[in-house]
Image 1: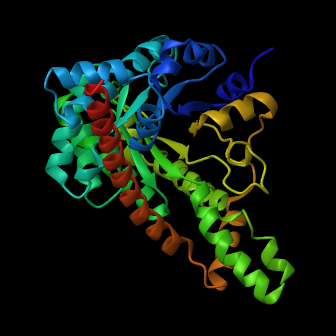
Image 2: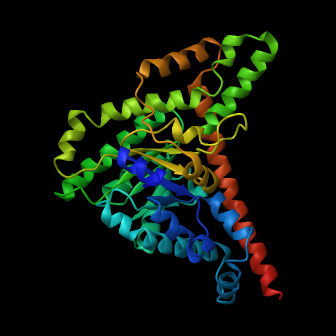
Image 3: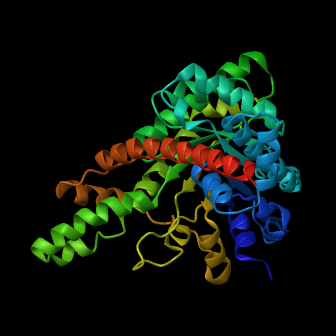
Length: 372
């Protein structure tokens, strides 16, 4: 009998793991998950900080690099790139079997460069060349400074995972940057089939913010109608973005690129762990099952879906229903676009803070280990 992940693949949705660690790579667990139908992997500074600071898996390599005179950033660079390379190698068969649709591992550009276009671009190119794997994706934030970077990397044939998308407007600008990059690449190459991209839409945080405001209004009014809106905004927002995705990738502009081998930039659902204990633990999996998408799951959510997930297309209803949900919220003074803008700003800050924390963790470990 096929696993829930394999059933999702049959429907057209790929599941990637939102986690990486040395033990996951070395102890055979990743290989087992790939056997169950896992199709890819993503990473970010928070994940690496957790993996490096909360285990001894990297201690030997840290002290070795420290003795070689490597700086803290250089140690970070060596550790993370080695993990990404090994993970990419583990997914090589998936990459080949799916004809380059899946099997990708994502590595984020240094978030401290988020406000600098040229520096982000140079770092993205450097990382892609240093990892030296065709199935790596470089993560770039969906920000005003990030859009030119996305375009430039795509124009150079570099796979891009566009991260921190919250709003429809961000998504549209992400797709626009992808199209611009492909058009530039088409002037240099007759075949565009070797470059891939995903647009990572963050999900659960939208409900976290909006539910908090709704709870406050419910406490004041005890209006039963308000309760029906709890936990609905995030998926409604995703449904509208998915509808826009269908429009953009079925229009004449993309069809002309497709004739040259261009691939669809799939929507990827990110931040899909359930934050509210009152909601099902796989809410943002089952409610976001849709063809030609990716869902990237943290390990706990992945294991929960393997245990009791049911596969059924969740996007069979009309998009009008989702629009009505967001309109109802707006009539209450809750504008999802304002919430998304706040979440983007805080997300950029959070990634920068996580990166700084990661470097401090490495520096602290390197100093402590050198004293032994």
